[in-house]
Image (cartoon, rainbow, N blue to C red; front, side, top):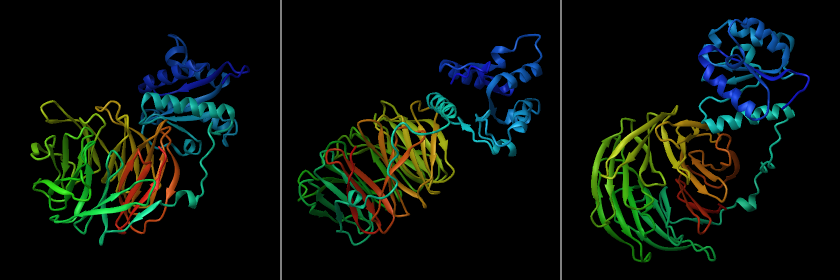
Length: 469
């Protein structure tokens, strides 16, 4: 970043309330080997600040403008960039670099200059973006270090390996056992179909679970067992024994007493959290499948529950509602959940998924937005990225572990399934789209042992795809 014909590489212009930001940014840049002039460190008692600004404009190669409401309200600080803009209105010299540190609109003149947005990022990701953007500015290009993903569709590679057609109405849920040997599909036709998805042979239909009280909203396997949990829209919950997939039988049926339940099973298989249309959370102990115990009922106060999800530690819960709010709750030893923090999206939340580390939470929303939140510190949720690729509401999100980083699969009412690379959660990239469904895609399941992704759709089919984690 050095430029020997300049006294400084960067001058940081900021409003006094943003001094902590200015010092943090100056430290990051100097630690990377560049020379910085910043009033907080270089303005001494008795010096004329306007004179310092004039010297900075002459001696600094670039001027970083820390844009915030305080800065925009301060006419005094605008002199640092207005003079540069007048001399270089087209920005060919790249001397003027706005850095957004708050959620605010840029004034008309600055809005025409490409900016660096640090608002809402964690310290690590803010530093990475700041230095990355400044480095690209010095190089004059933003060429990535890795080759871009081919943007076209390789139809042969992305074709489903199997299409399951057993149901007479839309498929609402899909689950794969931890050993990858049993696949369950649930439907609005009040049945659960059981399949054998062996990779070396065609997928084989095995049996059907019937006598369900109402259309089924979702299914999930309990931990590493062959116990399958199901929820019907009338609030009836059930646990099914699939040790012998050809002869499934019901272990127990119980009720949350409320309609349209959404549920999740803890990774250790001991707990079940159920969210309802009434906005309540029911926490059940299912460590003894024949005798589930309801520990508590909590009012979430976020509207109708759209999705619930456990973190990988089996104690952190994410709850999303129609109000657009997501709450994190922590389960303590006495099996009571306590509020940790909340964050609000711009639309109702329909789907949630934690990454394998538990440090990133993906949210799919009614307004077809996809949000990634930093949950490394559950009491302080920070948005990492906001993505828009789907044309309608996102109904399912699922992280797929891989050797480095993760993949994120999203699906929605636009019939689309997208696979994202999350090497950098600040700027995820679409790796490919999986096309073929003719109806809304509402649920996802993945088997790491089989490298199979299952997509469930209201077009009455489940498609299986080969996905490498």
